[in-house]
Amino acid sequence: MQPADPRFDRRNRLILAYAEAQGALERLEERRRLSPVRYPWRIRTLIAERQALARIDNSPVNDQDFTIDGRGAVSTSAFDLSHWRQAVGAPITLDALLNDGLAVLRWLGVVPPIGTDPASALQSGRDMADILLAVAAWQRDVAALPPSPPLLHGAQLFQLWRRHAPIGQGDLVASLLIGDRWGPGRWTGSAGGLIALGLNSAGTAWKRATGDRLDWLWLDAISIGARTHLDLETRLRAYAWRAAQHVERRRRPGRLKDVLRLAMAHPRISSGSVAKALGLTSAGAIKLLTIAVDEGLLIEQSGQASYRSYALPVSMTPFVPQRPHGRPDWLMDDFWSDEP
Image (cartoon, rainbow, N blue to C red; front, side, top):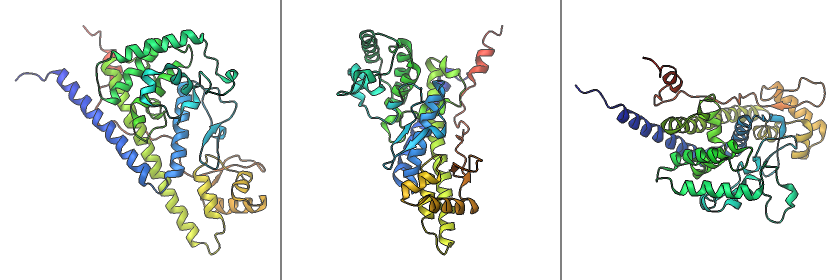
C-alpha cells in the first residue's frame, strides 16, 4: 500500500481550514443581522478588535480609554499612541487598496483627510515621496500575484506589505488592517482587527511564518476571531435575558432597563455618564446603579467611595476555541527539523 502523499494531505487540510474560516465569517454576518443584542455587541467587538491591534503594536489600550457617543461611535483618549487607529472601522474600497496609494495613506492616517490641516498627519518616519514610491512598488507586486481566494490573498497582501514596510513605522499594524480588509472585511463581521484578535492567541510564531505556515495561521486567526465574537454575542444575549427577567419582576423598574442597556454598550459607566445619557439627576443615577448592583446586574469596578465606575458581570476575556481542523504544530516541526 502506497503511503499518503503529504502534500495532498496538507492541501486537503488547508481546504478544510478555509471552509471553516469562511463558514465562521458567514455565521458572524448572519448574527450581525439577527441578534437582539446587535447594537451593544457591535460596539464591544469593535473595542475588542481595536485592543487586539493595539496589543500587537505594543501600545495596549484599557477599557477606560474608550468613549462611545450617542450614535455608537467609538473613540479613544488622546493618550492612545497606537498606530493607524483611525482605520479601524473606517471604509476603503478594494480598488483603492490596489490602485490609489494616496487613498491608502489617507485611510491609515499617514496623510490627513482632504480639507484638514496637514500638520494633523501622524509622523511616519519617512519622507512622503519615498512612502508613495514604496506603496506603488507594493501595489505592483500585489498585481503580479497569481489569483487566489480572498482570505488567502489577504495573507499575501499582508506579507508583501511587511516586506516593503513603506511607512517606516507601524507597518505591522498597517499590514494587518490591509489583509483584514481584503479578506474578512468583505463581510460585515470585521472592523479591521478580527485577524489580529485571532493572532493574539497564536503567540509570535505568525510573525516569522511564510508560505503554507502563514496560510494555516492566517485561516486559524480568522476562525478564532470570528468564533470569539460569536461567543461574546452569546454571553451578552444571556445577560440581556437575565436582566429582562429582573426588570420584569420589579413593580417599579423606572429607568433601570435604560441603565442596563447603556452598560451593555459601554465598557464602564458612572453616575455622571448615566445622568448625562438619560437626562437624570446625579442622585437618580446613583440610586439606579445601586439597585443594579444589589440585583447582581452590575459590579462596581473602582473600589472607591466616590467617582465609582460600573461594568457588566460578564467576562469580556476573549474565548479561544479549539482548532477544529487539526493544524500541525509548526513549532514542534521546527524543533525536530534537524533530526539525523
